[in-house]
Length: 512
Image (cartoon, helix red, strand yellow):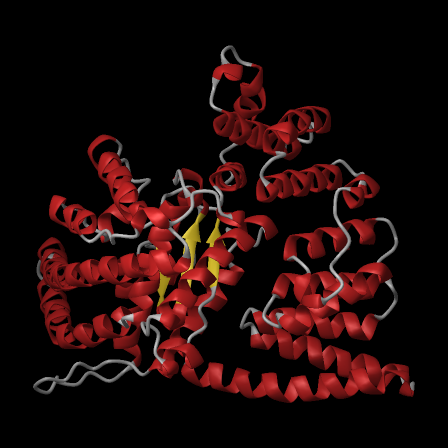
C-alpha cells in the first residue's frame, strides 16, 4: 500500500479531518468553549489549511496526473460544481475562496475524500471499480456536498469542544505511565477513543446530509441519480463479502439499510430522463477509462501479464461488446507498460472497431495509440494519431496538447508545440504539468530563461513557493550573467512573479 503524506495517512474524509483537527489543536492555544460557540473556521482559514495539505499531496510519489483520467474525473467534478452553484449550494464566498481542485492517487483502495478548502482526493481504485459514470458521479457529488456544507469547519468546531477531554486523558496517561506504562497507555487511548467515537456519531448526520444534497446535484449535472443506489448496493455487498481493508470508504461512510432506503425513496420523478449515452460520459467511454485506472494503479507485473493474455483466452469473443472493449484497452495498455509494443498494437487494433461508433470512446482509443507509440519510441506514429489543435485556444483538449508536445519534443520540433502550450497555461495557470512541459519545450529551443521561469510557475502551481522563489531567483541571476537586453520582457515577468510568490511564501511560513 502506498504511503501518502503523514497528514493524509488515513484515506477517508473523517480520518483526514481528525488528523487535521489534531494539528490545529496543537497550533492554537487551548481555550474553554463558550456556550453555543461552534468555533467554525473562516473560509479563508480553511483554504489556507487545504493549501498546505495540497502541497504535501503534490510531493507524494503516488500522486498521478494522467491527462486522460484527470480530464475525465475533472470534467465530471466541474459538472457537479456547476450544478451546485446553480442550486445555490455553493455560496459566493466559498466560490471565491475555495480551490475546487482534485487529486488522483495511484492507490488501489476504493476511496475518495474531501479536504479543507475545496480539495478532493480520488483514488484510482475507485475509478477502476465503479461500473457506470453515474456511480462515480454519486461519490463525487457526496464529497462535494461535504465541502459545500462546510462539514470540515463544523467538525473542527466540534473538535475544539472535545480538546479538554483529550488533553485530560493524555495528562492522566502521563501520570499513570510513571507507575505502570501499560495502564498509562490504556488511559490515554481510552480517552482518545471516547472523543473519536463522539466525532463518529457527529459525522453520521453529516453523511446523511451529504447524501441528500449530493443526490440533488445528479440530474442538473447530467447524471442518473440511480447511481447513488447502485453505488450503495456495491459498497454494501463489499462490506458483507469482501471488506478486507481495501474499501476504506465503508468505514467513514457507514452504510445502513435506512440510508440506502432513503436514497431510493428520494429518487426524483425525472430520474430516468438522463440519457445513458451522453458524450464523454457514455458507458463505453467510462469502461475504457476505468480499465485505464486499473492498469495505472500499479497492480504488479504478474497481474499486467495476466491482463495481456486475457483476450487470447477461451470464450473471450462471447463476452458483451463493452466488456471486451474494456479488456482489450487494459490488455493493450498493460502490454505497453511491459514494453511489449507488438502485443499492445495487436490488442489496440482489435479494440478500434468495437468503439468506432462512440466518438468519446474512439477518441480514447486514439489517445491510447499515441501512448503506445510514445512508449515504443515512435513519436512520428504517435503524432499521426493525434489531431491538430483547434483554431482557438479554448477548443484545445488537454491530453492532445500534452501528448503532441511530448511527441514533437522527441522529434526535435519543439517549436511547433509552443503556441498550444502557451495558450493552455494562459487559460489554466494552475496546471503544473503543462508548465513543466512548456519548460522542457523552451529548454529544447535554447530559451533557457523562459524555461527557468516556467519551472518556477510549475512549482508555484503546486504551492511549493520556496522552490518557485528559488527558480525565479535563478532566472534573475541568469539574466544578469547574460547582460543582453533581448530578454527584457521575460526579466520583467520574472521580477513581478518573484515579488508575488515571495509574499505567498512569507504567509505560508508564518502559518507553519
